[in-house]
Image (cartoon, rainbow, N blue to C red):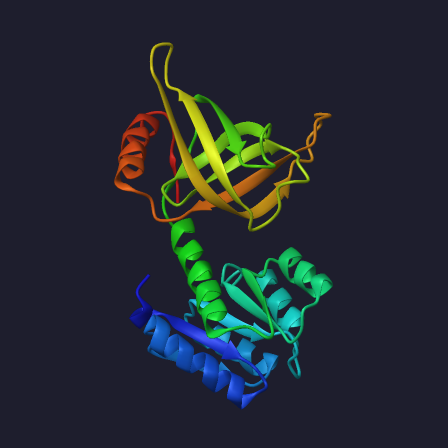
Length: 251
């Protein structure tokens, strides 16, 4: 993630907030290109004209509020993958849930510190970068098990995997929620005599429920990985070579 090349849009009705956030992004991330808008309608016009990497948007906006703008973005074929961080002027659990359900990439509630804002921004931008990495369908028999104080017993299988993250089908558990961290243990049976195993720490960023005909409630869980150590990168290089002969790359 190169801050110098980032293009970020800040939408807020307060000039002080716009200036403060722009200053943080410039000094902490090295962002050179920052666009600003005072209301949702103006922000939407900028979104359509600029190739943006992130939108930072206050919920309380004139003409087009934060939720209305987010809906407009997610319903657009051209911009529906654009990351958005929503700012709430107070702690409001219902508004947080609504933003998450509408696929906001992050939510931050006032009052927040400069470190809170930068960390949340970095997380969104990093996750976006990771999600663009190559993913491989899993053609081999495999098993996934989550490890953690309240996550033991949650098992499933790999749908696709890459250095950026993993999509798994898991049994339903009320102990697993969006943005939770989990240790993901994987075992892959390449043949009768050969198998591979490893463990990764991932952050849950999305859940899609399986509405199939099976009686057991399951879901598709998308985790992103952080920066991987050399041994895990080597693991993926070997696994990729094994998979490439049996599956296509998901771009």
